Length: 116
Length: 336
Image 1 (cartoon, rainbow over the protein chains, first blue to last red):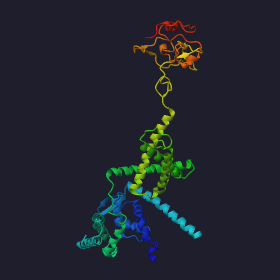
Image 2 (cartoon, chains in turn red, yellow):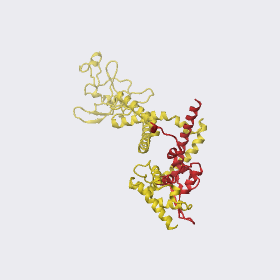
Image 3 (cartoon, each protein chain N blue to C red):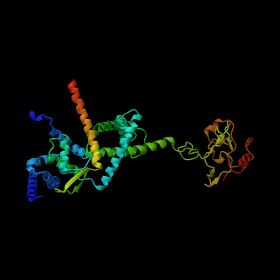
Image 4 (cartoon, each protein chain N blue to C red):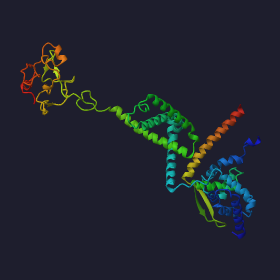
C-alpha cells in the first residue's frame, strides 16, 4: 500500500503554487523567461525547472493575467518580457490570501500535533 | 546566433513536440508557440548546450505537460478587451474597499469590516432562503393573491411552511458549499443571489407602501366601504313615521353624505334630481309604508302610522323642527 502515501516533497508542493510564485516574482518588476527562473531559484525554489516556468508563463498569459512585450538585446536574440496586468495583480492578491490561510492552517495543525 | 545553435534549438523543439504528440493540437500549439524564442534566450545565456542545461527534450516535455495538466482541453481563451476594462474597474473597487475595510473595522470593534460581515454570513443565508421562497411562491402563484409575509401558494399555509423550510435549508447548504464551487456554478449562484437581492428590494418597497397606505376609503366612494350600495336613506321616528328632510352628522359635526340625490319614478322610469333637503332624497321610494297599507312588518308593530310618503298626493305632515324649505318640499308634489 505504499502507493497511497503521498510523501511531501517540494516538487509536489510546487505544482500547486507555481502560478502564485511566478506572479509574486513579477510583482515588483517585469522579467523574461530565464530571468524569472533565476529569481525563483534565488528566492529558494531550487527545484523549479525551466519547462515549468515557461509553461506557467504561457498559461498565465493565455489566462489574461500577464501582458508581454519584446525587448531587443545587444548580445543575443530578442527577449520576451512578461509583466502583471490588473487581472494579474488581483489574482496575486486573491491567491496570496488563499495561500496565507492554508499555510497558517497547516502551521496550527503541526503545532497542535507537536504539543499534544 | 550561429546556425549550429539554431539547428540545436529546432531539433530540441521537434523532439519536445513529438513527446507531446498525444495532446490535443490546440493545447500543443499553445505550449510550443513561444518555445523556439524561449530556448534561444536560454541558449544565449552561456555556451552550454540545451540538453546540458535543460535535460533531454523528453524530460522537458514531461515537465511542460505537467504545467498544462490543470487545463483539460486546452488553454482558456484570453479575456476580451471589454473584460479587461471590467477587470481593471473591479481591481480599483477592490483596492478602495480594502482601504475602507481596514478603516471601518476598528470603529465597530473588529480588525476589519469584512471580519464582522463574515460573522453575519449565516444570517444572510437564512434571509436568502426566505427571499427565494417568496420569489418561488410569487412565480407559482402568478400574483393571483396578494402576498402576505409567508410564501403561500394557492393560499395554503402548509405549502408555505414547507417551501420556507426547504428554501432556508437549501440556502444554508449552498452557503456552506459556496467556497468549494467553481466556474459557472459559482457564477450562477452569485448571479442568482444578485437577482434575489433586487427582487427583495422591490418587494420590500412595495410591502412598505401597502402597509402605509392600505387602500383609499371614503364613504360614498367605491373603495370597499360597506355603504357602497346605499343610494338613499330613510329615517323613521319612534312612532314609525318617516322623518322628512333628515340631516345626518358625524361626531365631528361634519355632514354625512350618502347616496346620490337622484330619484327614479317607477311608473315612468324617468330619473330626476331630488328636490328635498336632507334625507330621504326620494320619499316615494320608502321601503316601509304605513300599517294601514299593510306593507311592512316593522310598520305593523307600530301603533301609530306615518301618513306622509305613502300616497302620491302630498300630505300636510307636521314637521315643526324642519326648515321652511323642507316643509315646502314635503308639501310639494312628489318628484316625478
